[in-house]
Image: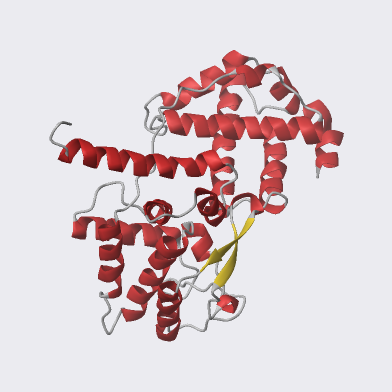
Length: 319
């Protein structure tokens, strides 16, 4: 793959190189489909901007010759409102910049196309934010409400949604990890090997409540759960889209008057925060979540500390 791009030289179309880079992320780096899609979207938008900015489709030679002001012009473009470009916030700009840098690093490593000047461009300063987990009461209400929504017509769908949400909360899975399970994973064992971001594997204990929820769904599902087929199915039998679970959580949010921060990922945040609140070890939680750095997991300790301080400030007579 890299040899093909190198042989094309400086006249090689940057768009073609980006296709090979995306393939590298999907096959060699084993990024999740959602991550691959985000990287593709961000770098494609950058190359499309350069097409207008430079007056033609950019080549690898153009990439090597870009100046910092070219990248700054693109970032400013992404911030502007318009009928197509809705304007990105600071975090989205940083994500776009990270994707572009990753593409440039790959071009330098694999294709000999280097541009040190472009790496000097810094993104906006981000204000540190803490995870916003679902409370223990709200998490239980979400699971109980979903499981209790069974009817003769859609009972298996309610059981499916309850199983997915239980895996997010009881095992700390990302939604993409839960939906990657296959029929061959049934019945779920007491420990499950999960492949997370970047192809990193971890072993996650599966609580009885999660195993029972999945067994109930499997018993009600009207489609054959073949070994290599997706475990969780859409209404017509196809692979379940993450969007369906996101919409289900949005319905629960409205129904139970939950905060706007209540998302499927907030259940994973709750998994970590509630373990920590009940005496879980930070290093163990790091392993369960599959975090590369302990500092990422440390944010959940900060959440708990903030919660304790809020309780103190609210309740203590001298606060």
